[in-house]
Structures are given as structure tokens and as C-alpha cells.
Length: 365
Image (cartoon, rainbow, N blue to C red; front, side, top):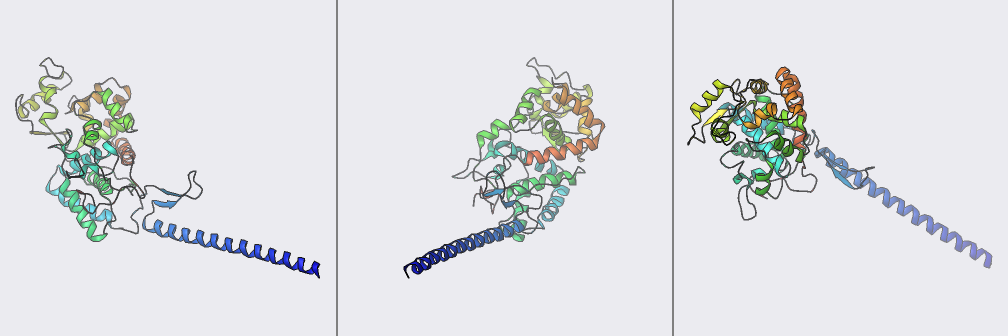
């Protein structure tokens, strides 16, 4: 009898253990199914969001994806392009201005739309930095794009992604290349006036300092030359190249690399005293077209800014070689420009739960 009781007791313990193991297995399975369900749901709406099965860090990971708004706002790029078409038709300079906005944003604290923030009790705006004050423009176009997107897809498309989409769209509408653009950036809750003053290359930069500025951002000499090619559209203020005309080396003499007729033409519109806000095309050969004329002009001593000309005459064999290559082969320039724009656009993006998606690009939520 006692032996039977012991056997029944052991059997009961075994059953209890089996029930416990089974219930634990069911709970874990249900948890996995729930996580997988939400992972799929999030991935449908935001393909850049995924759970990091099998990655080295585990948990949730985030990345940029060209399909980021595929389900949450599939019409995003169409809205951007419709606003850009009207804005560029109205103002030929706007394409270059929007390209420059993206550049000046990414070089400060990553591509996070910090450049769009106005002064407030919490923000000291980058718009007041040396490279930006009375110079960067296009904010109203970004406002219009954001307004249209908020109507179509409330609080979905970030201002940082709007800048990236506007830069690509402006290039395409000017006759330049198209590229598959990774999306999913979020907007910063901070700005850096100091970073804007420190990290954006000045127009009178030497080749050595240009290479350093770009290297700081993880960009190489091929990126430097290709991205400088954005100067194939747009204009520059007299103040940015006056030194080349009147006092290049501190001896009251012009830059010896300036082609003579080009030098005299520039002097007529950029006087030694005053006239700082007079403007000249960066590429006077085809100022509205995104092409490789910019590089051809540099070879002829007709690069407008010192930072343009030093790509050829500075002490850097690789930049000199690339200027010559891009002047010969426009498709090669377009290919590298596209790759470099993607690379620059990937600089330290905020993703996942970092930052926010601003309702108004000028202010924090």
C-alpha cells in the first residue's frame, strides 16, 4: 500500500512538472507570436523598423530604407515634387538653395533638420551662424511641403526626410541624376550654433582644410569633389569671392589662377568696397542645368569660389584627377554624386525612438 502511494506521488509530481513545462512553453510561444505580429505591423508601416533577430546586439534595431513610407505615406515623394516644381519654376535659384540646406544640415550634427529650427527659449538657431546668416534660404518651400504632408499623412514624414527628398528632387528637376533615397530619419530636439560655425567649410577654404572638413564627417576626396559639383547650379554673393579679386594672398593682388576675362567680368559686378550682396552664378555656362560644366570651367580658370578652384590647383593629386575626369565624363560625375549624396544623407541620422517627427519644422513639438 505504502509503495503504491509513493508511486502515485511520483506520478503526480511528474504530471505537475509536465504541466508547468507545457504552460511555460505556451506562454513563450504566445509572447513570440505577439512580438512577431507587432514587428510585422511596424515593418508594414515603417520598413526601416525591425526586431533584430540574430543580430549581434539583440533587441530592436532601426535603419533607413527607401521603402520607409511605402504604406504609411506612399504619396510623400509626389507631394514633395509637386511643391518643388512650382517653387523652382518661380525662382530659378531655389533648387540650389534646397540642396545647400540639406548639406548645411547634415554637416552640423547629422541629417536631423536642426537647421530648420527657429530661435526659442529652448533653441539657439543655426540660422544665425556665420555660414547661414543672410545666406541659407528655402525655408518657406520646406514649410509648404510639410503643410501638405501633414494634411495627407499627419505626423508621419519627418522634416529631416523632407530635406533629403527636396535635395534629390531639386537635382532631378534641374536635369541631374536620380537615386534611391534611404528614408526614416527623425527630427532633432536640439540645434548647434557652435557646430554650424565650426563644421561647414567656408568658401575661401584651402584644399587641405576642405579635405579635413569632409574627413571629419567620414567623407573622402571623391565625395568632396562630387558634392562640390552641386555648384553647377546656384549663385554666390560677392562677399564670398571678393578676396580672390583684390587681396588673395594679403598683397592687394588678385588670385593668379583666375582667367583674365573672367576676372574683369567679376570686378564689374563685385566692387572692392561695398556690393557684398551682389550675386554671380557659380556656373555661368549653364546656371540652371545640373551638368558637368562646373568642372569644365574650373579647368579654364573660371571656378568662382576659392574652394572650387583649389580642387584643381591645390596640392591634392586625387581631387585634381577627379575634376578632370568629371569634366570629361558627365555620367561618371552623376554616378559619384548620387553615391555621395546617399553617403552624406546617412550621416548620424536619428532613428527609432530618438528625436521626434515635428508637426512644424521650425519648432519642437
